[in-house]
Length: 89
Image 1 (cartoon, rainbow, N blue to C red):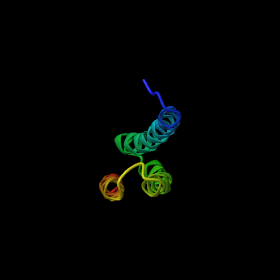
Image 2 (cartoon, one colour):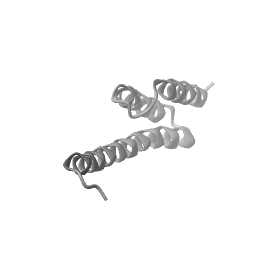
Image 3 (cartoon, rainbow, N blue to C red):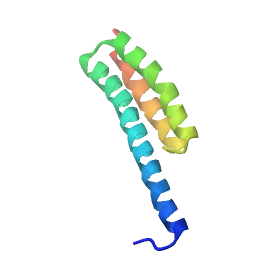
């Protein structure tokens, strides 16, 4: 258990930061899931719209330090490749 005032403050800060990060990650996963669902349904227009909504969210998460910038690049690359594959030939 924390004894000093600074240690108690750090515990409070960590709790707030953890809650915010957890919320932001959940939101990010929801955006990703929307793209995955649209791809699974085979509806290219919905998949493209969901991907367009996902891009700024991923970029924001990278600038805030929530996820690594390479993860953002990898996710966008792989998802856009899959969205393009749903397009009618």
